[in-house]
Each structure stands twice: as structure tokens, then as C-alpha cells.
Image (cartoon, rainbow, N blue to C red):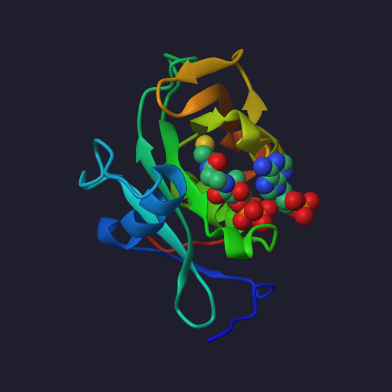
Length: 165
Ligand SMILES: CC(C)(COP(=O)(O)OP(=O)(O)OC[C@H]1O[C@@H](n2cnc3c(N)ncnc32)[C@H](O)[C@@H]1OP(=O)(O)O)[C@@H](O)C(=O)NCCC(=O)NCCS
């Protein structure tokens, strides 16, 4: 079956078991992909789906203290960001980040941060994140940089409405 990779994906909150296969394939070389906190009630898992229902991208957001803003009021961490290589460049990653920011804003968060793989840092920069650290190594994965985004600076009212899961 073929699908139109250029079509805008739908993004929706999903149970963790929906995100694990793509997270594993893209970020863990097919290995175990569970993360601490995956089952916490406050953790939000989002999946992008193609028109045929196939999961083309995943991300997770969860409340977590920011290492570089220890006194932030309501920080959330973005993790497990991955899109299917077959759809890259067609907007799945952007749709997931925009939906994730809307979820965080809707829950009162004012800061989103992530440990960004260096090859993906340009993507996060396009999404509005700022690099706030030098490069550091995550053993077994590679070089990362710390990045964050202040939601007030993005005008929260401009974010798309997004339902709570
Ligand atoms: C990084 C990743 C999630 C981007 O997903 P994607 O589906 O390609 O993203 P989009 O198609 O929505 O791209 C949005 C914009 O970012 C750009 N972009 C995408 N990946 C980029 C990258 N690695 N560096 C710079 N720009 C990038 C696109 O060209 C596009 O630009 P445009 O709006 O000007 O056209 C995807 O490449 C991926 O899964 N990579 C492997 C896993 C990974 O590194 N995850 C991040 C872990 S921290």
C-alpha cells in the first residue's frame, strides 16, 4: 500500500504502547525503548498518523525540572522524538512539536526543554528552540546539546487548540 507522504499528518494523544515501536526503530536501533516516567499519568505521548492510519512520528512530553533553569515555574521535557525516515521533511516532526507545545501550554507549562541529538538540533532551532549548552556526550547515543523554548515568547494564544488526552 502506498500513502501520500506529503499529506499533513494527524496528531493525537496515544497510549505508550503505540509510540514504542517507532521510538525503538528510530532511536534505539530496534532495542528496548521504554523511558522512565512513560507510565506516569502526567506524561503525554503523541503520535502522528498518515492518512492510512500508519504511525509516522512520535514524541513524548512530561513535567520535569530543567537542568539549565532550575527555578523555572512549570518546565516540561520533550523526549523520544522520532519520525519514520519515509516521511521526513514532509511536516510530521513539526506537527508533533506544535501539538506538543499546545498540550504543554494548555496544562500551564511555560518552558519546554530537551537534550537534542546534534544532527537534530537544526530541526529544534527551526521549531523555536534555543541552544543553551555546549556539546555533551550521551553514552551509547552520541553528542547532544541542551535546548529550550519559553512558551510565553511564542505567544501561547497563537498555538493550535489541542484536546487533553
Ligand atoms: C529530527 C526529526 C524528528 C525531524 O522530523 P521531520 O519529520 O523530518 O520534520 P519536518 O518534516 O516536520 O521538518 C520541519 C522542518 O525542519 C527541517 N528539518 C528536519 N530535520 C532537520 C534537521 N535534522 N536539521 C535541520 N533541519 C531539519 C525540515 O527541512 C523542515 O524545514 P522547513 O519547514 O523549512 O521545510 C527526524 O529527522 C528524526 O526522527 N530524526 C532521527 C531521530 C532523532 O534524531 N530524533 C531527535 C532526538 S533528540
